[in-house]
Amino acid sequence: MRVTVYGGRRLFGEIAVDGAKNAALPLLAATVLTDDEVILENVPDVGDVRTMIALLESVGKRVLLLEPGVYSIRTERELVGTPPEELVRRLRASFLLLGPLMARHGSSQLPLPGGCPIGVRPVDLHLKGLRALGAELSSQGGSWGARAERLHPAEIHLDYPSVGATEQIMMTAALIPGRTVISNPAQDPEVHDLARLLIKMGAGIMIEPGRLQVEGAKKLSGAVHTVIPDRINAGTFLIAGAIAGGDVTVTRCQPLHLEALLSKLDELGITVHEHVESVRVISDGPGSFVGGRVEARPYPGFPTDLQPQMMALLSVARGSSIIKETVWESRFAHAAELVRMGAQIRLEGSTALIEGVAGLSGAEVSVNDVRAGAALVLAGLIAEGATVVIDRDEHIRRGYRDLVGDLNRLGAAIIEETLTVEGSVTAETR
Ligand code: EPZ
Image 1 (cartoon, rainbow, N blue to C red):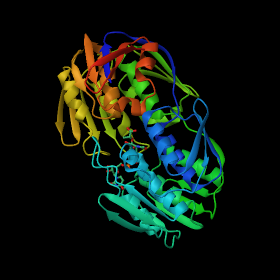
Image 2: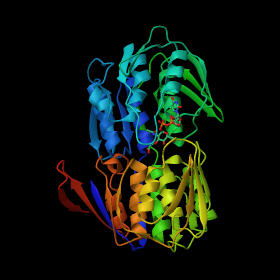
Image 3: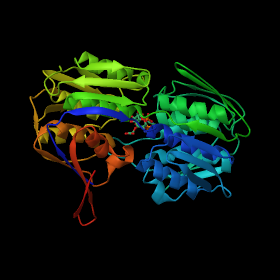
Image 4: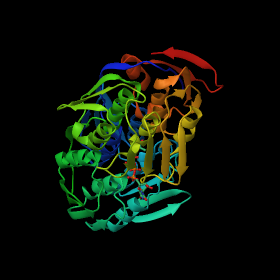
């Protein structure tokens, strides 16, 4: 995909946010815990979700699209414990299937999806939890096998509040009668959303600060569940309004999930109005707000998935800023691309030091991961001339249904073109 952004246009209007990709993925994985029909609503139409649906079909689930965003999932044939490697490798979150498939089928086998542009992505906390629940784990040739020899409830402490490990352990424990306790679990809204589905399916789950308790059941049943709004996409559009200048309202979102971002934008001197299910941002664009300090931390800290977008914003703030990334060990690849556009950024380990500049200049930049792609498009909104964002692996489409179309509907001037294998281009203006 090649995205050409013509800078200098302010953004005005409303944008409704889709369901959260990072909630939909574990919710889809949880459907393997029952043969009954599970209906999921407000499922976002993004690449990662399509891959997870293909994975479910490959292990024996029937997935029906009832209407846009509404899927019916139920078991169609005997579940298979080993999804195809080429699908697993496409999606990091496929690892969430290891425990649930093992608990339902008796055994499962999943190749490690490998590292990705933001870090090694270890799974040691996932494995520690499954072992504690009695799973027999074995690894051969880069893939992990799990056998449900004698599953039993357990008390598990997570050295780090890993989102994926919390979800993996919670889903598996939901099918193990008895009380499992996870201490130091992730507290993200997406974890709470998964807990709500598991409760509807028949598990007992209680989450309090620092502790997550699961009362597992021998059998789980079907349910109907609506995916929460995507706080990261909502935050991306709010930062777009802040950087470009104008007056943007993001609707169908949950401001409560955005507190860290909203208070940071306010601290920078950007006008933010919170309503029950919408947030409005009013800004005069580059140079109209001051720099500040951002520290990406586990929820409810500032979300790491909005760190690249904030780096674009702070590049054109008045004064200097500091960004500290404490979640991923290498999530600054977008810094070099912003520097190509004239940003003044210096990296020191997991800290980025930014000197605000009056403006950026269009350049050809490349996309490293889904949120870096969004950040570079946002930088293009205010760059002089045209910014060509090359996204060969279509990272942006993995997390955003139609980032270009949505920004154009707010007044941006962006052309999206599909890059064929030879690199030629078919224009596709939205
Ligand atoms: C989820 O990834 C999100 N993905 C990520 O969003 C997000 O950046 C991340 O949480 C942090 O908020 C989905 O939900 C599908 P983690 P996850 O396990 O679960 C270390 C996006 O852009 N760790 O909380 O993989 C790990 O190295 C993506 O949508 C271990 O050490 O994140 C990292 O430093 C990018 N051992 C930290 O924890 C483990 O077993 C956070 O990882 C697992 C993780």
